[in-house]
Amino acid sequence: MSNHSFVIEGQQAQEAAPGDILELAGAEAHHAVTVKRVTAGEHLDLLDGKGLRLTVEVTATAKDLLSVKVLRRTEEAISDHPVTLVQALSKGDRDLQAVESGVELGVLAVRPWQAERSIVRWNAAKVDKAMAKWRAQVRSAQKQSRRAYEPEVLAPLGSKELAKTIAADVANGALVLVLHEQAENSVAERVISWLPRAHAGQEVIVIVGPEGGISDTELQSFIDAGAHAALLGQHVLRASTAGPAALVLIRHLIGEI
Image 1 (tube, rainbow, N blue to C red):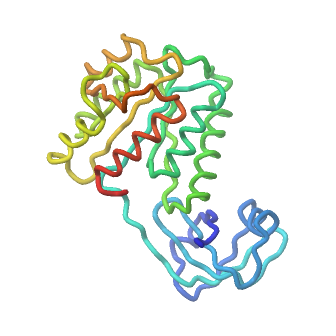
Image 2 (image 1 turned 45 degrees about the vertical axis):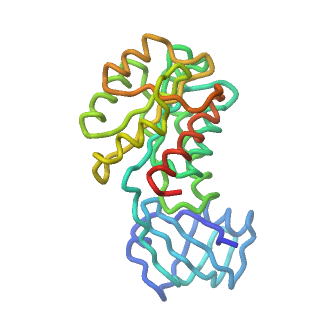
């Protein structure tokens, strides 16, 4: 069984070496001691969200304090082709379901997209609270899946701003795929044709529309910016499942699954 994982932040994580004694305080320590009920002698993983994994042994616990001894320090490599999920806002928290599954399956960044047909709308008063909810979902999924990297939650965009971002990403060598049921080429075909000319660090960006689908105007503007429409199987998937399904396929073709 893999170790329970908790987030560690600050300078002590960067300087930690095997044999060091660290103290974890605050919400993470409270969660470990009170919720997970860890006890002395247990092994845990402490993650900094940037690729560092500290495997530790618990030496002592208090209400909001966890003392541990560092057993092993591991710096995990980032993907050669990181995947970003651009997820349209969707009702019933289906967007958050997609984000949660995407994090568990290896996405490295997520971006909220206010699509034309999104039923959920983020006005200025809602943005900060909604973004905090997305970040909390990302961190929870990161810890649940024991990932050393915490995916970044990128700033929300409308369709016009997203088209501009696509153009910049394509100029940097990214493969941008818009999942669409009327596309002629599959996700697999697009990825396979891109990989031989891709360089390390160049990413794949997957765009998933809302329940009502991507409008013709949006699709054309994304294609004009350099994106490719891509088909994911024979059936139309929910907003909550399309992105994670594409992610599994893409990471398999990249050689990471």
